Length: 212
Length: 212
DNA sequence: CTCCATAACTTAACGGTGTTAAGTTAGGTT
DNA sequence: AACCTAACTTAACACCGTTAAGTTATGGAG
Image: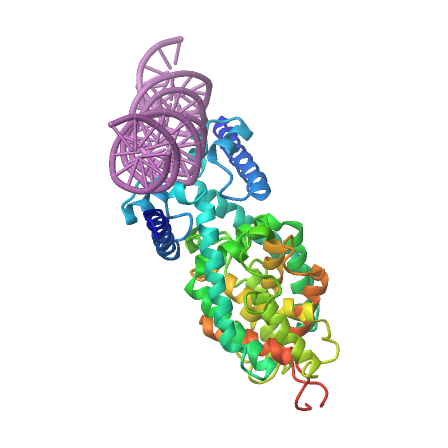
């Protein structure tokens, strides 16, 4: 109620403005290409003001990542109401890809760059909760597919199947991010590649429908 | 004959020493973490001496990449004599994974780090030649599998199928390199994951063998 | 044999980077 | 009115990749 509260609010407002400016620049030009000075310019503060709100450049990106990955989990929630578990896997793969296309630099940092895992203490995402944890969401769909007899009997390990599906989709995305400008390979469009991957994975996991 | 030839030889010797030092450091610590000054220290030259042999840091990396790609292709050559094209794809996937496990930082530099594509002009690898170009090797096996009717009729695009198989195997490897220490996921052993990926991909591509 | 051009470097420096230390200022508290 | 602290700014540090200019050894020409 007093002015101390207004101060508190203003502080978080500045914090949010830094975050927004950083996101814009990281997404547009990549983590390394963006400098603290340019982020500061954008919001008309001095470069060092950022350090009053964030420990360093890395933690800036880290914070953007967790908040944006919660958006991914939110996207997944819309898919959760799909009844058919196999269709849910298919749609999750596409949503995951869309997300990676929208936030390639976040994706790169979180899944393509080795770094010491975040201390579970201060990780905002709740592990194992499909509403916040995208991997848990995938697992729960896979589990349902296995339990309702949709997959071949040899594919009975929920974790292994989930990791295979994740790896497949990740592979398409990661190669796209790292190599899409490389003229060495005559790349098919990303959408085609993702569809092909998901189709092949699901066909490979599912019980055959027709004889030869 | 004269000493000009000895000079030429010495020049290439220094060049090779720079390359070796750079490879050691890049592989041990990653591209960004290594500075020109440290490479120079290692071989006891001044930092700027490197620029007499290489245009810049990036071109150093590119030269290392092309030479290591050739090592991978050499591994593939041993597989080339396998008759069955589908088995060849399977074995190529495993060999590719072995290469990545043996040289994880090489792999990271080559396939997980975006960098401007090499000018085809000065690329030592002959594109499309399966003996030098690992991607072309994969394509040729896939092409043979398609042409001998091993795959379902909808999978008729050699490039698309090759890119899918590559992406699948890459996904397993890349997640392993970037995330294998992450306790968030209860990882299955790498060998199991690679086998699962290749099995699922090949089953998904192949004509079904049994009815349900 | 001398002179000189060139190759193969080194030293110094430039403009940039992330980050820290020290100084400043506005505003609430006592 | 005096003071204290939050929220900054300015100055500076230790790096970075890269370039310009200077140095030294050496092979070749006259």
